[in-house]
Amino acid sequence: MNAPTFRAAIAGTGSYLPSRILTNDDLSKMVDTSDEWIYPRTGIRSRHLAAEGENTSDMAAEAARRAMAAAGVAPEEVELLIVATITPDSPLPATACHVQTKAGLANATCFDVTAACSGFLYALDVARQFVMAGTVRTALVVGAEKMSAITDWTDRTTCILFGDGAGAAVVRRADEGSPNGILSCATGTDGSLAPLLFVEAGGSALPTSAETLAARKGYVRMDGHTIFKHAVRNMASVALKAVSDAGLSPADIDWIVPHQANIRIIQAVAKALDAPMEKVVTNIETTGNTTAASIPVALDAAVRDGRVKPGQNVLFAAFGAGLTWAASVVRFGR
Ligand code: COA
Image 1 (cartoon, rainbow, N blue to C red):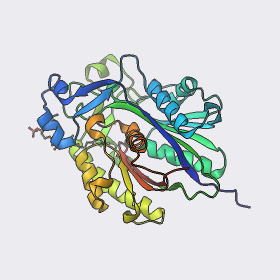
Image 2: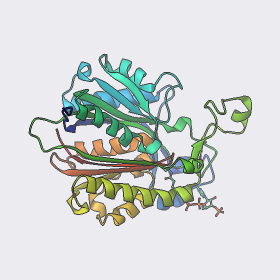
Image 3: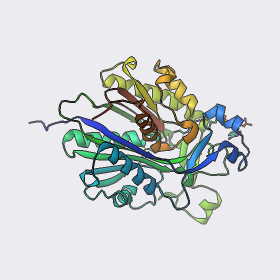
């Protein structure tokens, strides 16, 4: 006999952006750059940065609390917590364990997922599988990053791009008879392209040492030009796959919530999907690229200001280091 399968739905969202703001003009005092260079190429004008002593788990816990409040879910109901991050508080234990303590999720099994900017969608897919299998009824998926900790503030080619923040979604078994829920998740990876976007030191292959610190090997390095091309191609194709797996066509999509890496990447993906920019949720102008937090932060803003409504079809698409890519179609609501 086959195990019962259930539909998983997004029951509530939450987000947190730290209050400190770094503008392009601020950056122009730190490195040789300008708002005139940054804004037209990226769409970014400012980004939020965590305060001294404010960690990934603090931002994640606040986003998680807000998502639980929106879903009307008590902390003890959460059976699974997945935190997507590439900026864990420390290598050990998983940041999810700290979030469990801070958000009071005493009954949750907790672990992290590492898939860079695709991390939230990878984690959403994992949570969905647990709910569909009937293993858990209520899960919490959080994307949280303190990118400022791994950004080289002397490298103008990368430091202009990133920001800090956290976003969360409660993933629950859909209400009986509801047509809403996560309709599809599509993911992909090409590890042979890992050298395009990486942090060299700080892991077991090259532990942090005086030499790695002096050579600034603990920070993000990137071939931005090549990444840009792969991002457009892979985000568009995985998005089309997720739409087709959901049994829909691009015209059926009400909202696209893409990973916020570069406004020109977002525009190219929208064009490939034949979607007007009016259907695309963007906040990159004021957040920069918050990696795994980017999609849930943008989604939460669009839910709270009433753009995304229950019953609408929402497409998520992401791309990041790995290289990884992912997309998901959700009929919003429980
Ligand atoms: N300010 C001023 N000049 C800058 C600069 C900055 N912040 N960063 C780079 N430059 C200079 C370069 O040194 C280069 O000068 P040169 O021609 O004299 O050598 C010139 O601008 C062009 O650099 P290039 O890297 O070719 O620019 P680009 O048009 O590719 O734009 C990015 C750079 C990073 C904005 C763009 O490649 C990008 O967004 N890529 C995707 C990155 C991304 O999204 N990564 C995360 C994926 S999840």
